[in-house]
Amino acid sequence: MNVRYARRGLASLAVASVALLAAGCSADEKPKAEKPAATAASSQNPQSGNKQPSAEEPTEELAVLKGQKGLELTLTSVERDLGGFLTIKGQLKNTSDSSSIIPAQASGDETEVVKHGNSLGGATLVDSVGKKRYYVLRDTDGRPLTTSALSILPAGENAAVFMQFPAPPASTTEVSFQLPTFEPATLKLS
Image (cartoon, rainbow, N blue to C red):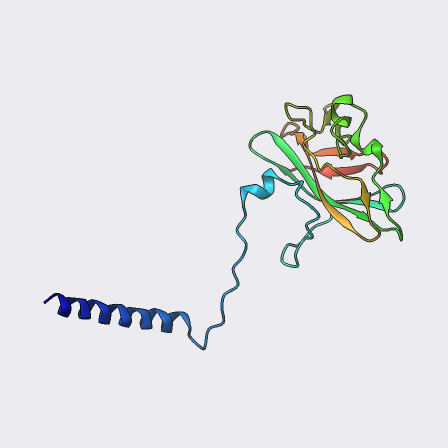
């Protein structure tokens, strides 16, 4: 009797395997491209490199700030979150024909920030109506919550950047973004 049950089980398994194989390999269907899932890692580690936006990720230019020696900072998003933070993202691009050194002034002049290397820690937001200036946030060790380890940007290259600030009050709808050695820009907040 055990042999008969074993044969039935193997036959059932073979039929199920053929059915699954046929369902998964239909000649009329093309394989579906999987969209990458949004992960918390991308928001927790924005310093992770020079990721280029893909063709599927449209980028809106909120402002383009011109800097020294062909550097341009294009701001592409300004987002408030529920935790009371405001995150600004963009692309730093070298439009010149030669490599450009990221100016040390972009890190600001606070000793605690400068000791952690080149960054965009000198960025500020100015709320002229509320008469307040907001600085890039720092962690408990004094590291700025911004893209860091910036040194040289080769000709024609760009780097994804971010800066995180305390969010101005909800009633503040406009701020001036300032980064040393770059032109200032006005940003609308929603």
